[in-house]
Image 1 (cartoon, rainbow, N blue to C red):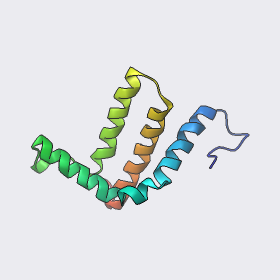
Image 2 (cartoon, helix red, strand yellow):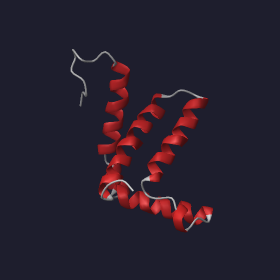
Image 3 (cartoon, one colour):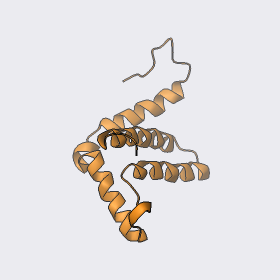
Image 4 (cartoon, helix red, strand yellow):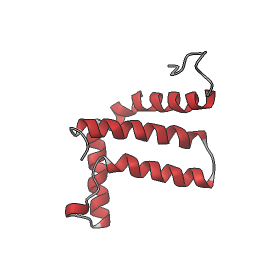
Length: 106
């Protein structure tokens, strides 16, 4: 899947990132880990339990991909990797899906 036409592709490296993220989000990972919302709800529950959070300050399913972006930014700060950029774009896309699956922001 080429996200830019040849004429409109002044950023071939950006296309690599977006294409890689699209492939990762649409891949067999979905089958392996189940529905995105359910998976991130499970992760949020485990993180809340581990951190002893409850009530108003709970980590929500939509927070999980954003926190994973921050993790990838920390990795990128230490060492540039195309994989970090692909994962950041992928987590942003998945975050939007989780928000949509939850019925909108908030």
